[in-house]
Length: 455
Image (cartoon, rainbow, N blue to C red; front, side, top):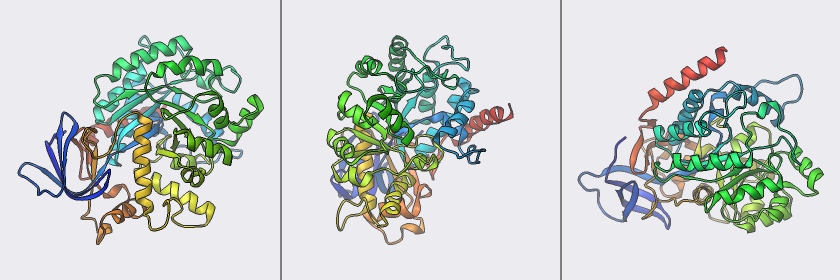
């Protein structure tokens, strides 16, 4: 992976807006200087249009291996719940080597798509029988190894998962690899922090899986383990989940969390798809991040986010790839806007006001919300990690475009094929749209998948 000391962009998106002739100085993986209006100098790496890398706020990396394998109809109506049973069967056979290979493939593809950090919502802890490995953090170590191999920054979110339903129901057989007690989870967190410590710009947070998988007492017990780090939780993804939560507590999931969990800026509520207007307004005012995963939510038939009301109320969001059925910054943002258009039968719904670029609004929001949910900085500014990508403006799709039109074209008309290079911590990890280790990473992925599908 190459490590330039300066990258020069003909134009770049800075926190204050677009600037011309931007020269970014890099020291020890962070941005040490940002000069505007200066010519390229000898030894600089030069590119046309520079954008800050985006955080992927929600990933289950191992599920990349099952992408496309659930697109057939069973004997009854299919839903998230029938998909989940297929996922349990798939996960029951994964070895640590498989998990590492699938994560490395997913992280490589994220970098190629403009994601430079991933929040790995990691719940695959134990061996296929449900027994802990000799090293309790064996599977977490494989996630860390995949991040190190690919070069992506990691926010590791070990998942606390104890029950199959609201009120502390016993876990199902398909969940045996996920289950931890509070004390065991504390040890897993300690080990995870040691594993992540050597990775640049990486951190650890906690992830109580959902209100159906943890009791209130358990949620209170694990929250201190976050320290100052992020707290992520699934909430209100499915109508049935909402109905079951009401039957258990008399409240909807987001309502319960707002009333009982001390939600603040450190929290990310993943999905938050099914909310009342009152919940939406309260969530927006809380300062917490909504972790929206529009492609997965569409693939699973979850429903449509109330993003118009949430953003209109000052809400903050990040984007995630969740099941990793398809990995793309541009397509997540496009899907988010298009679902709102289809529901409201209007265009440019999330632009945020008259005479504003929808692409720019979405990109800025995902950049800032993603960084907040990861507990770290982002953007092309001094002190932030040197995480950037460039657009291949030689592509005809960009002809005649400048400024926000470049983002609108990238998101709504171009997509990932328009990404040229990606720098993570100042190292170039993608060149010509391809990760520098694509061949070896893909070979391991293919080998693992071939073994799994033949058994």
